[in-house]
Length: 357
Ligand SMILES: Nc1ncnc2c1ncn2[C@@H]1O[C@H](COP(=O)(O)OP(=O)(O)OP(=O)(O)O)[C@@H](O)[C@H]1O
View (tube, rainbow, N blue to C red):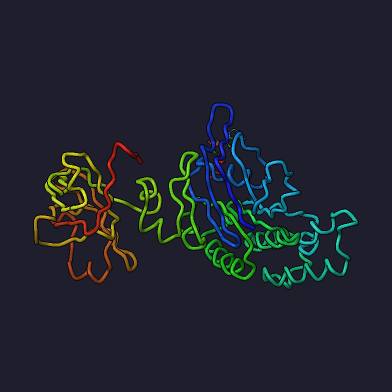
């Protein structure tokens, strides 16, 4: 089932939660809504589910406008951050719940329900846990039961709101891989909300990056990470160094640094900001050309395969973060307080008056 969100607007009293949202989710896709707290992710998910009514705009499932349909009639499966399992019911009965409460006319036979639950228990790898109660399960197991319960009624769309948000880091990592695999097996159109960049980039087919009630960018994990459309996306998806400066004859002049940017030939004298990820900066002991600037090493964090080095530019007195492989760090033999030369190897330029982060 494909989902089409068109021109959705939602305001709360004196707050604008969603500002003209357009989003197309393809049939069978797994899409992440990613953004900081308050950016509107949950509101959008709840509007798709029918738990919230938009002030304007429409939601289509396939070609059907579901605006007038109640939550139940939309046939969506929902999984929330806090396991809403029934504590007095076994795992088996929790999963069977949605089928057991159907009116007699549409309720499957007892044996069919049993078969379905056994099949779902296998799918979420909890075959031996059917007789346990939620209090006898780990957090990760409970979320898997919640997912099985949501899938029992064969929804056409699966919506997950921070499904692993309450779990510890290790369990989260295991569960998100498991979710990806599960999705590949059952291929149900799914949207999940997260504020965890790594989770979205690892699990989703496409990521929708939200900020302040708007969509900043929609793309595959590679697209949003490697080609951020806005400074916000650049900043939100990883560490970034800013090189403020001015264009002069096709170069960015930032303090004592001159970086050729032929694509800015036409933008003479414009104030621009270059965005550079820490791994896109080289660090050298000696000045090799005019595209490097001198800086003093102010901090070194050398645990693990990647070493983080912070330097203070001598020209602008701004800090620059550099990431380099441990082998290179050892070879360079950089020490705290030492003068080095840094140079951005890649730089994405945005004109500041258009954006701010
Ligand atoms: N029922 C409500 N009444 C008033 N304001 C609300 C209500 N629900 C959400 N909001 C506001 O709408 C904005 C978007 O909230 P929403 O919960 O969608 O954000 P979110 O991105 O899911 O955040 P989080 O990651 O913290 O859950 C916020 O500013 C929030 O305060």
